[in-house]
Image (cartoon, rainbow, N blue to C red; front, side, top):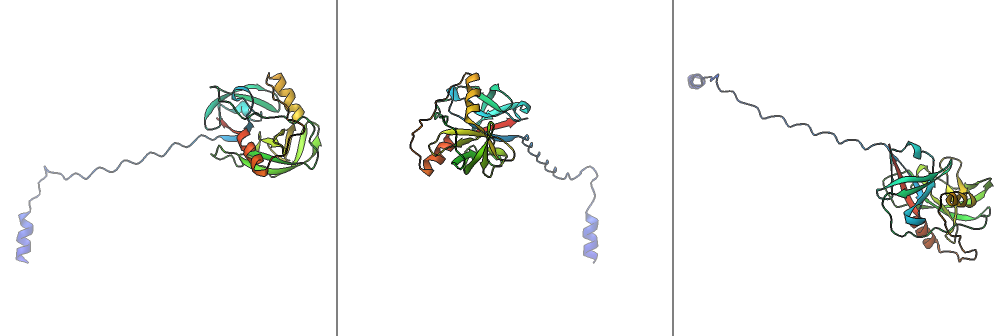
Length: 219
């Protein structure tokens, strides 16, 4: 006990020396949240990479990107449709061919779009069926999501029979309306050959993916 007391007494406090604690690690800054944006679809195949899509909501976009991130702008629009032009000329696209004759009820078609509107720029083909036509709109038997609006409706020959409208019930703008809009915008798409041979299911899905472009609206 005496030894311990002497040992304690040998320690003398030095008020001039202060033990500094190591600095606390600076908190990591939280990553900036990605701006809210929505994604829909469009159909490529016009001159210089122009993309045909639906006009819904485009007037609220601070900027628009096409595909993997090319800047785009609205070249022409009306109440239903819009034609988007990339700021930089794009390479040659697979030409979209308009269906010349009316599409019959019961026709099996392929749609393509982006479903929930995630980050993928590769469209997903969706099987569907034409139920009928109401004025300028085709009615569809299909399961569609927000990111499918603006996508193509393709027949088994790969011809463009319509453009998917957003919202419910599932509908699409019919070819005559598309043709009239494109003519007014100064863009011509050729008509599909009336006796074209049907594509295989794989070729039809591939064509749908190649014609479909992601259209992203940024606030």
